[in-house]
Image 1 (spheres, rainbow, N blue to C red):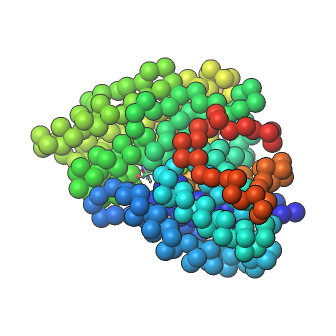
Image 2: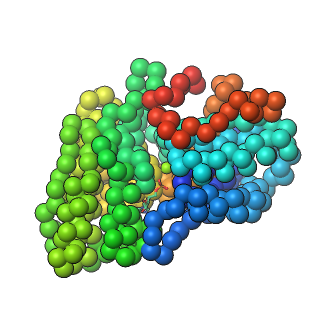
Length: 328
Ligand code: AMP
Ligand code: MG
């Protein structure tokens, strides 16, 4: 029986969740947003610093527990933006010292995967579509292996970059989704799949050129979704076939998109696989998934006691396949 508090701060979101025996008791998040530009890492970190205590208090209140009931703190150790990661770690270590509890360093991408168990997925291929990360990941031979990934920018950053160019602000994904609903006019765009890898920069340049030439934003949003999501689903299907698994799990903020979810469900149905889509609050970056994996890791003994806190640091470039999985 343990109660874990998880802290997420890899990029734009500062979140704190509380998990007890695999059950989510709270999941509070605050997101750094802008009207027109993209994320400025130091500004996002400042946002996290300013909001941290407030999110902490609200998360404990939602969970209906007092802080002295917490058994361990987990935090997103990487991958992510260094200034943002540092704020999360700073707050995590502060709490560990204050409450005299151990610290667990969690890989953000593995947390997206493990929290999928809440939806019922047991051994899925994860199509992880977030801002900076776009990967097809599955557990094989003792590790989470990356079967395919973006060769340039992440799907979310690609969408946000185009949205920024079009002057519709950050995050662009939800706005593009809304615009796409206004059109059925498909304009051909570069489709770039290499095996199980994808690339978006060619499509981004092409979209910007088409926008400058006066193509309608609604048509471009629709065509962007149809093309980019078809690419992702193609790689996910190839990975399912390659590893012989029968479950697809969606993760990451872009997976909130209804059209991507629809395409994933159609593909899974066609090949007799199951499609699992976590609730929106677990798809986006959040503290509950960090607490969820934190609890699993704590039980496996993967923790740092207060006296050893100086031995743990952020890992901004940690890859999913760098993580030793000793709990499976
Ligand atoms: P994450 O990094 O996983 O928190 O996801 C953030 C990314 O998700 C940003 O790039 C958003 O633009 C994108 N996003 C959020 N909602 C949607 C949506 N409905 N459709 C497409 N992208 C979205
Ligand atoms: Mg994420």
